[in-house]
Structures are given as structure tokens and as C-alpha cells.
Image 1 (tube, rainbow, N blue to C red):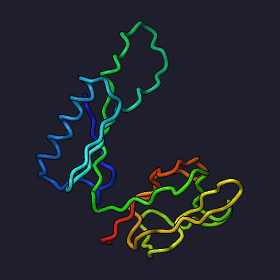
Image 2 (spheres, helix red, strand yellow):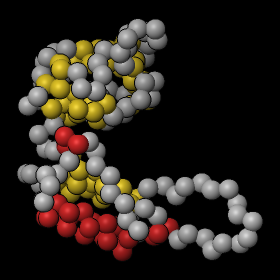
Image 3 (cartoon, one colour):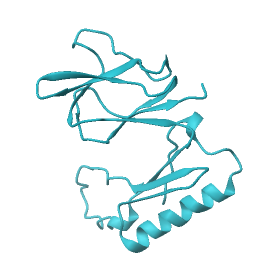
Length: 163
């Protein structure tokens, strides 16, 4: 059975948008038919990403049970509004939400930020590089965990400039 998850209530497709629902269903079907793990489509109005969720790890049952086929795993759909601005990593390094382990994070989800405000730090080659917001608005989503390694161009934050 397929399962769809919305990224966030503010970023979800409007109620009654049958085209988005139909597109998500078609992409989920295509995922199974072609054996893909992820597919993403973006248009002027909406971006839809559908990917397979990893199979849950279960304790072995007392009686033999048939194995779950890879195509039976649940599917996760992520719908993001194109109005959100993505702040991406300008370099490879380690992502930090605060200036030190004991300091408060620079921003939290839901915070209002100004253009040029520091959002995080990326450590690269023992240098701490402050990453600034390229637009003013509200932090819709923080996409990276503190201390996680990031690649060049990897999305870090989603900012809603309309907030």
C-alpha cells in the first residue's frame, strides 16, 4: 500500500488539487514499474518528489513468514511549494547550527530572518564559515542535522520569503 507524507502544512499542495494527487499516484506507479528508488518532477506551480521508504527492521517471527518483495515497500511523497527559497551549502564541510556546542542555535524552524543574517556555520579545513540567508523571510524547514557532513550545493534550509 502506498503512503504519502507532506513536507510541512505550509508547503503542502492546496486541498482539492486533483492534478497534484494524480501526478503523485502516477509517479508512485512509475517508481514500481521501473524499479526506481526515487523520482522528482518540478513545474511552475509545484514540485513533487516520490521515493521508496526503507523497509522496517522487524524481529524474526516464531513461524516462517514470506519475505516482503521490494516493490511492496511504502512510498513517501514530498510536496514542496516553489515559493520557498532553498539555502544551499556553498562548500563541502561539517554543518553546525550554533557557534559552539553550548551556544544556542542561530535559527530555529519558524524564526523570521533578514537577508544576510547568519543561519549556520560550515567547518571546512578547520575554518568556520558563516552561512548567511540570501533572502528575508521565515525558516520553513531545517534540512540538515547538527554535526552532519554536507556536500557542495546540498540544501540546508527552506525559507518562505512571503512570511
